[in-house]
Image 1 (cartoon, rainbow, N blue to C red):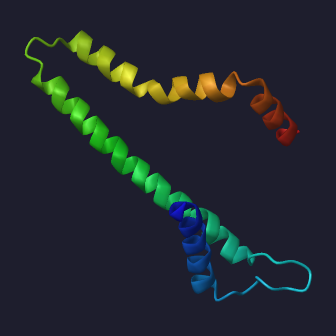
Image 2 (image 1 turned 30 degrees about the vertical axis):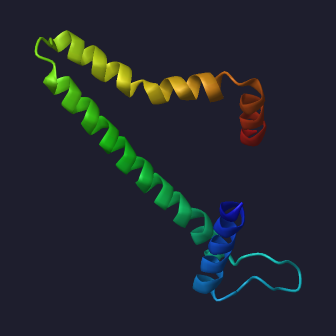
Image 3 (image 1 turned 135 degrees about the horizontal axis):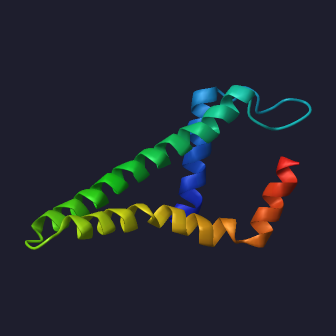
Length: 112
């Protein structure tokens, strides 16, 4: 419960601290300024992508070490291992997004 309240509170507090509440209280809307919106979206996105990249490289380092410890490895098995590990993201995309009818219909609607 603490995370449910603390995470959004800290996010809004940091946004207010960096934007100095500019654009929050206009007469027409209660929203961020365009510059604030950019950093409110791009900042956390960049942090998440950085964390994902670090986690990916740490995971691949373990996989490469385990692959290097195999005494009787062949180049064919190493190639298959690398191919299957690199295809994981594509398989997740295909089975969870590309084949999902509501998502594809929404993408088509947006692109029209």
